[in-house]
Length: 392
Image (tube, one colour):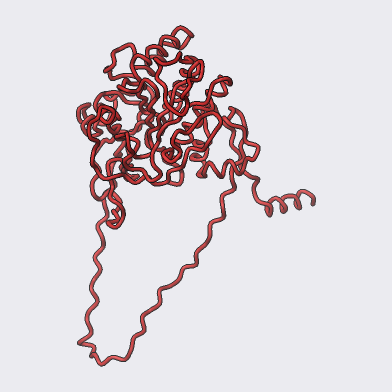
């Protein structure tokens, strides 16, 4: 009898709140995307949350709200008044023609897995390396894990209808979900820094941006220009906090521009339009006088090489997941200084090859970190498209 009553009580009380055990490398953002909720809902469900997340920690998942059932309402029939029309004069109903259904397309994109090359992907899908490069506007054969490559041009039937009253789309906006893949990185800041005129294309619209919150681990140089896509903001914050945990004595890190709240052109940049770019300063042995209010070059003060490598390493680990960094721009000479320190302190040759362009030449098409002029005082980190969630 007691067992029967207990079963009845459990059926009324409903299932217990779900939980998630944190795995190595996971962040609040990736967990929220995996379970179809937001970072704010996760924090609200875990008041005693400690960041950065520890592997093995258990998080309570927010209870999904009950779906509201909408009662179907039958359309009201239009009142028919008296008519003098004879049956022969009654207009015949127009026959409805069935709309032709679009044929189900084959796979349009390919997500790069570990060990794959552009050549192996082309062979697998019956195409060529040149065709893949042209279709995805790639300037080299370098690809990264999690990158999505277009395999065919989407046809008009596969694209959702465009609202002509909405703001104009630009190349900085993500493509429709049915044809979403990683586009080539937008032009760097080099031409602006050299004094040339920036592109005059229409400004992009950044939808769903969040502002990087203030934190003791870093300093926001321009809070009004610190807006980005949620996975960019969460990943940037997680990387800096990870460095602070490894090296508690480091100074506050200077954070430069991400994007404006609604995206579009940002003064001083040709990129930073779509919430996927962030400028991050460097770590020094002693805090320079004007830092972190301003970026300081690596030649002006001795770098804190262990902390700076820890920052790059954190972004490198994030690059292995969908939506992580796809490129980091840093002066070639500064790369060399950090590379040599990391090699002497036990970092494997494989990791160094995957991370740095150095020592293969400043224009070599290899490595996550690439040379870019006027980037000797900060890292320019460019993130990929956000991974699709269960809600998409």
